[in-house]
Length: 608
Ligand code: AGP
Image (cartoon, rainbow, N blue to C red):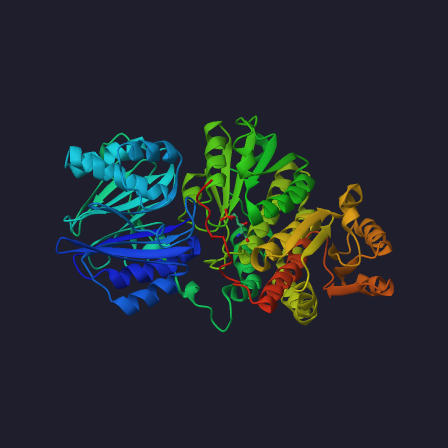
């Protein structure tokens, strides 16, 4: 969370800082700010709220440009999202921006207060500024001061720092949060949270490693590792597409990304399946005979993708598949060994909890694989095996195409590993790959339910609570539908296993409780239908997403049904994702919420 950028070119940097912050806003949008150094002075402007507020303010007050500057877009951790808490923070000669959380911040703050430090904000960031400033008063060697202070900080952070009077020195520190260095295409050096932030200036990117410090000037840079030895890090050539930043003809990125789903499924499947020969190619290191269990760990939407994967993988491999949310997995001391295949699923490849889980699994000897969308991300670099998704850049905070690509990879993996275990034979595998090949067409057909879903969304926009129900793979889709609705409409929604309702939640049912029931025509359809009748008997306001062939019988019960194209049980998770995404989107549009940047959220969650 939080995006940081630093530029040292010796020429005007303010416009570059703003253009980079635009690319970083997906990491947080509680406040934004930039600062420059020039002629021994510091200039800084900050504004609460989105970047556009900062731009407006700068338009009104004017820029004092310089040859070095830093910028920040914030997702608040310590302190409310006010201007006072916005970055950059200035303490005496020190100007800094920060991403992450300093865990021993209270203790450091008390120490500073005891020595009469004047602390202006509620942030942990300002504390770092005080520590550096205090250190520089003891010894004015900047490198020593930075190394000394960073060694005192506990937690996960990335920092970009400038020192007043040092107009050719940009400092960066990475510990737990991603930070990259860009070597300017034309001139200068850059520090940023990710390659996207650096894309307007640089194609030569260095990903700092844990504990690294960088000291960059216009013409040179040096990197120190966690033991303070000067090191050389690999320079990567990166092409980042800025086209993804354009909404095209759509009103929101969510709509654009939603309608890209048939294409991105195609791209992702094409990486793993030769659709001419139906041959599946998976990494040679994924030899299932070496493992006795599969563990999939992730967060949020990626967790629901993992849950869908569990149904498929267990069925196709007959192996135990465990799924857990990363924030729980990492602290429950799970028994792990070299017989475990550990799979992390992450769109960004930077989610702090998922990354920590991946590292834990590696450390305990598991073979690790990352289903990841950002090929340059930390998870992609650290996992033993990369299982890429090809969603392209996903801008909207609510994931749509990212999710569909994650389940595309897990579906192909279940076929590939199923063949290895002998649980699937060639005929089964061909049938399944052919079903996957139909997906782009099927998903396009699903878009035809949009007008029915808009009608439903107009009703849902008036309620306070919604229940989503499903069985089998429709259960995680129900949870994903509830998450999507919560995220962008702020309506309280929950996803339940349809068979679980009678164990408690059925008490919630009355005529004011809307229920969205996901009921594809599959092996558990009859069971779900019984659950539908139980709810109907108690007066619940039911809408059923079901197949064309079943919609009529639901309507005969006097219930609302929205008909999706008939499909196989295997691909139903893809098909039924579309109406739940559409429902969240159109409810949000009807309510006028901020679809692409919902309150309190950020796209990349790099704090615990
Ligand atoms: C999705 O709509 C959410 N914004 C969120 O749950 C997200 O899926 C989660 O934070 C995990 O992110 P990742 O896939 O980048 O690891």
